[in-house]
Length: 284
Ligand code: NAD
Image 1 (cartoon, rainbow, N blue to C red):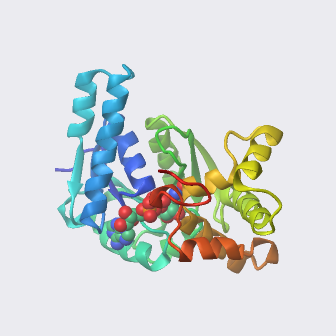
Image 2: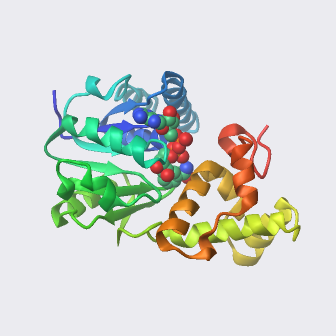
Image 3: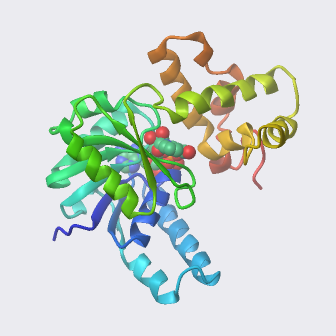
């Protein structure tokens, strides 16, 4: 049965599990899906661990923790979910993957429902073009780790309606986030500024300017950044960073966005950062 406070989240990786957690904590029924059963199980186990930890610390009551867990439903296929007024796609950063998900997910939207993507870089306007209602398609760009990061970058595609923007800002605020709006352009605001900095830090490492820990320490203490660019790249995922830089390089057509060869090498070696326990730093 459709309810107003219900959301389908597609993708249970780094971002999808965080998005599912904040919506469940905010009273939404959450239907979480992943193409890989193991990823779905690990995603849910991770969310439960986070909720238990919050309860142990006294941040939430035991009954609240239980209620939050009971609002989290796993679905092996999107078809198992009821119709929902909001669907958030948070799967792998590949246009063909996302197009396929969006095409099948849209049948699960209520009549005036919103289809959102958490993409970091793929054009909202292009993804919207493959959907039945591009005016109700939007970028809802959460940040990592989702439960801690306040921002949602709300990205308006060329055909996104003002009503969709307004409702999406409302959804972001309903889960305790601050929504900031921007227009669809490669990398939006956040990654157009962040990724060149991360890429330059990787060039510094490749050129032997300093060791990883020194590069990060200089940026932390000298620029007052809460974490260094290499640690941040590891947190985001080096495959995700590479994909975003490729989009910036191709779509903006400027050499300054060219991904550092060392980044390509790391991804080819499967050193993807925290999620593979090995990136520029080790996570044993
Ligand atoms: P991830 O690799 O951790 O997780 C992606 C998940 O999507 C995997 O579990 C994978 O099995 C699943 N998936 C792949 N194809 C699927 C399909 N057809 N149906 C259902 N699930 C499928 O990636 P992530 O870091 O969580 O990134 C997800 C999205 O969020 C990407 O678009 C990324 O650009 C964006 N994003 C990432 C960050 C970050 O810091 N990692 C920040 C903001 C936005």
